[in-house]
Amino acid sequence: MDIVSFSIWKFRYIEGILNGMHSFDVCTTKYVDPVSKEVSWIRYDYTKERAIIERSEVKHGLFSGDRLETSTLECKFGDLVQTLKDLGMYQELPDGEHHSLAGKQVEH
Image 1: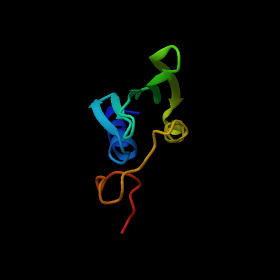
Image 2: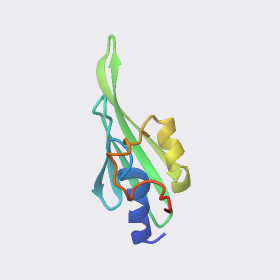
Image 3: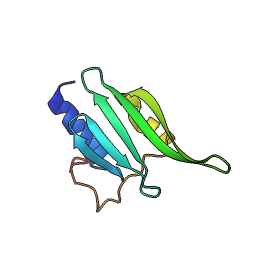
């Protein structure tokens, strides 16, 4: 995939339509969980059509106190939407709140 096609795809299916997704740079999306405010990162390799999701979560221990744990998951672009759903990171913005060019386009 070339960078122009990638940029359009990333906006249309990730940053332009999902709650908490913010463009950081061309190859990186910052995700801020709407409830916990924890930050995760999606880093893209558009030449290989792969995404690496880096999630950081605060784990609360009864005796050990709070600690930050980071996990990494890699997937193909074609699997990214399902992976985000599985991780609880996929929540579409309401129709009136996302850009009209985001999401699947319907011909009129």
